[in-house]
Each structure stands twice: as structure tokens, then as C-alpha cells.
Length: 286
Image 1: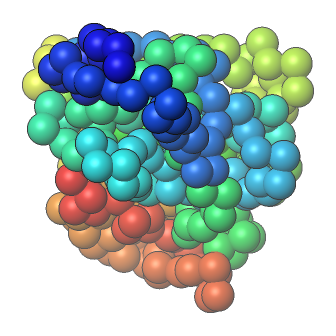
Image 2: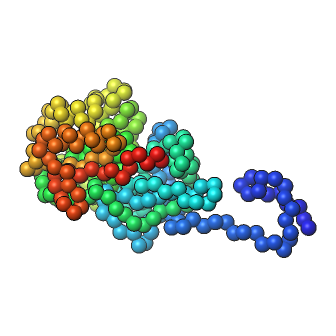
Image 3: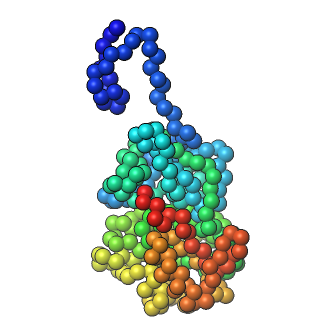
């Protein structure tokens, strides 16, 4: 018999192991994908990219289930919008950090080369197919709700089917807007859709707790008409305007009321109408 000291990642105390006892191989994650890059935008926000399963086909705006194993080897899974467009060779995700969250308390520490679980079964309502044809497309998001629109803003179909695309994004502070700002600025130089985006995409970021050139909640700026005045455009019209909404439950409910006041109706994949709302992330406690 020999005495081995197993590192903290294994057994915690000095343990006696028989030479002939086989050592269990390291666990391999089910549906594993490898992390290719990680970026921390603030103390509470980060994005990361992973390899894309060869079998995964999705529509820009959809989400998948991703996760990690807990201490007992059981998967902790949550719904995450794919922030990269359908044509990208990798998958990008944008996430909040919840200190005591079952998943993000672990996920925020991932490093390049490590693996996550990714179930390749995309679903979601924030897809262009769920909207009736129109002329102006609104993306309405708070916080990490911009993730599906990060995908859709890079989707050629959005600019082929609509004359204008307006991205309204509200966060508490300027720093929390940085992910979206950099993405929008990079679009004009994108070799695939740079020319399509030019003159069509309007970006309207606002803050609620820090001074900024545009401030206020999306609901207030829509209801008061301030966003129309600032952008020099006509108010919403159900004949021409279509919208997609992604945020907290309270945000979704409030925005739906505003959109309905302009005559827009909620639709779905099975019944396209003037606006759609993503409800998969409400109350996830990530």
C-alpha cells in the first residue's frame, strides 16, 4: 500500500489507496462545448464564446439551454439567448453575474479551454418569422435582454425585410451599455452586412441612474414620444411598425401595454402579428 495526497480538487484529506485500485477518469460534460473567449464588461456583466455543435441550426433570436455540473455532478441548466447570428461559426452569450446564482456564480469564472454544457435544441419567439411584414423593426431591451438582438442586428434578413431597424437599450449606467455600443459600432465595418446596415440601423441607448445624453426608461420614452422626436421619425403605427421585447417580467408587461396603446398586437411563431415578447428568462434566478 502506498499513501497518496490527493489535491484539493479531489479528496480533501490524505487517503490510503491500493495500487491496484483503478482511478476513476475525469467526468466529461454531456453535450460539451469548449470556451474560446471570455470578456468581463463590468463587475456584473460578461460575455463568452464557445464552439458550435456541427448539428446546431438556429434562427437568429432563438435561445438554447446551457449549463455546468454542480458539486454532485448534476447539470445546472438555464435558458440563454444566442447573441451571435445564425451564420457565425461560434456561439456567443451575454450574461449577468449573480453572486449566489446556482449557475452564474460558477459560469462567471469560466476560462478559455474549459467546457460548458450546451443542449443543441434552439427555441424562442424573437424571430422575424413571428412578425407580419412591415417597414420598421424595433428591438426593445433592458440589461442582458439585448442578447437576442445582438444576434438579430447581425442578421441580413432583418435589413432585407425592413427599411429601418431601431435598437432601444436601457441600463442603469453607461458602463452597462458598453457591450451593445461596441457591437453597434463594429457593424458598419462588418464584411458581411456592413453595407446593409448603413443608413438603416438606429441605436438609442439610455440610462436610468447615471447622466447620459439619452436618459429614461424605454416605456417612458415610447409613451411620451421622446424617442420619435430624438430620432426624427414618425410615431408607431400598426401598419408599418413591428417590435420585439426582451427584459424582466415587469418590463415586458409595461412595454406590451405601450405597444398595444399604439395599436400593435402580440404574436407568436404560430400566429405572426405586430410584436413578440420573449418570456423564457423571467424568474430564472440564474
